[in-house]
Length: 75
Image (cartoon, rainbow, N blue to C red):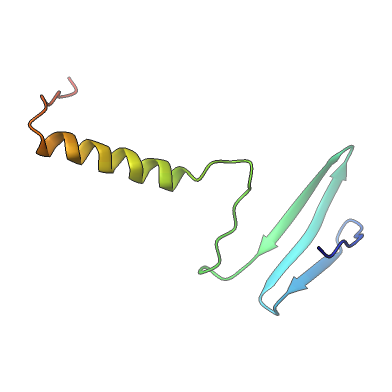
Protein backbone atom coordinates (compact mmCIF):
# COMPACT_ATOMS: atom_id res chain seq x y z
CA UNK A 1 0.00 0.00 0.00
CA UNK A 2 1.30 3.42 -0.94
CA UNK A 3 0.64 6.04 1.74
CA UNK A 4 0.74 9.72 0.77
CA UNK A 5 0.30 12.95 2.68
CA UNK A 6 -1.66 15.66 0.85
CA UNK A 7 -2.95 19.08 1.83
CA UNK A 8 -6.23 20.72 0.79
CA UNK A 9 -6.36 21.32 -3.00
CA UNK A 10 -3.53 18.89 -3.71
CA UNK A 11 -4.10 15.93 -6.05
CA UNK A 12 -2.77 12.54 -6.95
CA UNK A 13 -3.03 10.98 -10.41
CA UNK A 14 -3.51 7.25 -11.02
CA UNK A 15 -2.71 5.82 -14.47
CA UNK A 16 -2.94 9.23 -16.14
CA UNK A 17 -6.75 9.00 -16.20
CA UNK A 18 -7.88 9.08 -12.55
CA UNK A 19 -7.45 12.17 -10.40
CA UNK A 20 -8.08 12.30 -6.66
CA UNK A 21 -8.14 15.75 -5.04
CA UNK A 22 -8.34 16.64 -1.35
CA UNK A 23 -11.21 19.13 -1.20
CA UNK A 24 -11.47 19.67 2.54
CA UNK A 25 -10.15 18.38 5.85
CA UNK A 26 -12.49 18.88 8.81
CA UNK A 27 -11.60 17.14 12.07
CA UNK A 28 -11.23 13.45 11.32
CA UNK A 29 -13.05 13.64 7.96
CA UNK A 30 -11.51 14.20 4.56
CA UNK A 31 -13.60 15.21 1.52
CA UNK A 32 -12.20 13.87 -1.74
CA UNK A 33 -13.05 14.72 -5.32
CA UNK A 34 -12.52 11.94 -7.85
CA UNK A 35 -12.41 12.36 -11.62
CA UNK A 36 -12.36 9.08 -13.54
CA UNK A 37 -13.50 7.74 -16.92
CA UNK A 38 -17.10 6.48 -17.06
CA UNK A 39 -15.96 2.87 -17.41
CA UNK A 40 -14.18 3.04 -14.02
CA UNK A 41 -16.38 2.10 -11.08
CA UNK A 42 -15.83 4.26 -7.98
CA UNK A 43 -17.54 2.96 -4.82
CA UNK A 44 -17.25 3.38 -1.08
CA UNK A 45 -16.38 0.04 0.49
CA UNK A 46 -18.63 0.58 3.51
CA UNK A 47 -21.75 0.95 1.34
CA UNK A 48 -23.22 -2.32 0.01
CA UNK A 49 -23.47 -2.61 -3.74
CA UNK A 50 -27.15 -1.68 -4.23
CA UNK A 51 -27.08 -2.86 -7.84
CA UNK A 52 -26.23 -6.40 -6.72
CA UNK A 53 -28.95 -6.37 -4.06
CA UNK A 54 -31.49 -5.12 -6.62
CA UNK A 55 -30.44 -7.81 -9.12
CA UNK A 56 -30.87 -10.48 -6.45
CA UNK A 57 -34.36 -9.20 -5.58
CA UNK A 58 -35.39 -9.09 -9.24
CA UNK A 59 -34.06 -12.60 -9.83
CA UNK A 60 -35.97 -13.83 -6.77
CA UNK A 61 -39.23 -12.19 -7.85
CA UNK A 62 -39.03 -13.62 -11.38
CA UNK A 63 -38.70 -17.12 -9.93
CA UNK A 64 -41.87 -16.49 -7.88
CA UNK A 65 -43.75 -15.46 -11.02
CA UNK A 66 -42.64 -18.60 -12.85
CA UNK A 67 -43.61 -20.81 -9.90
CA UNK A 68 -47.22 -19.64 -9.98
CA UNK A 69 -47.06 -17.81 -6.64
CA UNK A 70 -49.94 -15.35 -6.16
CA UNK A 71 -49.28 -11.88 -7.56
CA UNK A 72 -50.28 -8.74 -5.67
CA UNK A 73 -51.04 -5.41 -7.29
CA UNK A 74 -50.38 -2.04 -5.70
CA UNK A 75 -53.61 -0.04 -5.25
